[in-house]
Length: 248
Length: 271
Image 1 (tube, each protein chain N blue to C red):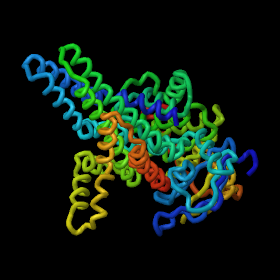
Image 2: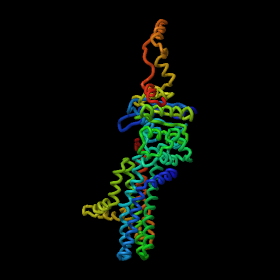
Image 3: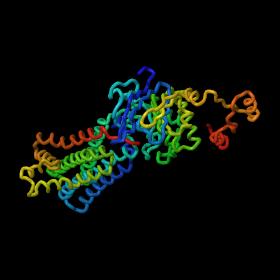
Image 4: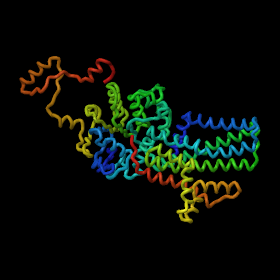
């Protein structure tokens, strides 16, 4: 399993287009920091804009991670090669999920690192609360991206269809699914006790956890629920993938 | 299963929905065999390979590789099997980079192994990315990937599909070399009977989801005609008369040499 992850991560680094894309995002952050200082936007306004912009991470960066992780495997049949060489299907799915976590965290660290370095270079000042906002935004969006990829993985593996998975990912990351569920739960015909369920939605739970964290509280109760949202899809994927026909 | 048996399938069944593709597949492959699976297109040859490799769930029966008796052992045994089924590699990588990827997955160390297998299949020195490969080159890379790390057992599914005569002859020689020089046991499938006849040492004929017959090259000669001989002579008609005069039936006097032989004589290359 470790051997596979190592080889797959190395393959990931061979695709220059992926790095060009993330490099453009990083350059954009540097450019924005430069503009913030030189066109007198005001440091505070820039920090707020950056903090909000992190919300675009699941939509802008998530799909590239998703495609990098899964599309090549289907296109070039490497899944068949790997499983044919004896890696168990469960280990294969778990490896893919761990790779997803590592790449998502790595990309987010690159973005936050670039922000911190650029603000130092261009002398953009931020206070502790602004930094807290940015870090909690980073944590929220990293967790959301990982969760959405894990949920979309179910379709990718069960139907061997990357497009279907990508559509579901977009629906989740754009907030369409959570908005639809929230609207549904707050409708008049829905019983009162069900409307309370909206606070148990994935995004709401992450927000509650991160907000508590930024206020200095560590919400132990909510962690298993968030992990459940992330781990459960991986378990479902493993179960469904066990009996899937892998064609050449 | 004796210690000479490398692969054993017993009553293996496979269904796709209600359609039963394999009803009762039973055969053994012994160490040192080149086992040819024969059958028309769609008879289930590739499905047998997929079942062997764990790419398709089995609906019934037992599969054993290298004496494995349970799933864990079977998975471990699979890690020592090389295979090439419709070669497919990352098209943005070269042959070497692709093999490096699979080398790391298989836990095979050393750049030398990649160079060695590329030399065996005649792709050493090729710097083109996979997307620029011809069909023959793709098949060769598939074989190179399959034989990396000197596996005891190698599976080739239709390895000559779409190849030109030179390519077919090269792959045929390569398979024989792998078997004779490197001691690899090979399972190979083809719907081109004349080709398998040249390559395999044992045959399994698949029909209606079953292995309907198993035979060796020797059996094949015996079954076809025990008294059949071929006489090659510049004076074929005179030879024919002599045979007839001695009470031996002469069925045909025909020019020797196949179209394949003529082709190689004309354009050069190895047969």
